[in-house]
Image (cartoon, rainbow, N blue to C red):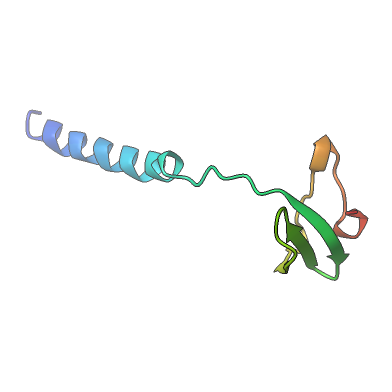
Length: 77
């Protein structure tokens, strides 16, 4: 029984490190952007303070929920 204790301790530390480390070091930045165009599985945004447009792919089954409402990509304004 005593030989299992160090092994279980190591396993517990590894599990803790793998599950909590991404949350501890996550990027907490919030970006403010304006939607320029949305549709055809893409969304184009301009970031606050920057006039450059950024286009990103959007999954067909993406759930878009601004202000606690579910929208389709084409409904973004």
